Image (cartoon, rainbow, N blue to C red; front, side, top):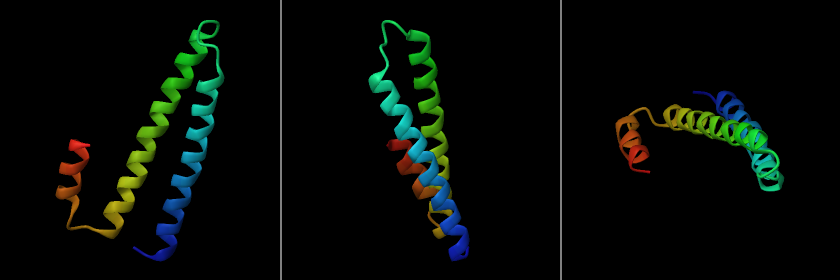
Length: 79
């Protein structure tokens, strides 16, 4: 994989991470008692973004190390 592809992938990670940080901040400030539906929506969105981030970061591992995929998956499952 070339340097440009890795850069593009890391930019995607950075963008998603920024979005996740914004959602986590919103979760910290929303009044759960008054806005439980909003809290549920935000927490679900945060979980989906975190999953997407994990996949994007995993893709970076695979780009740089094709031989360690099975090792990575074993350690990821443990984490």
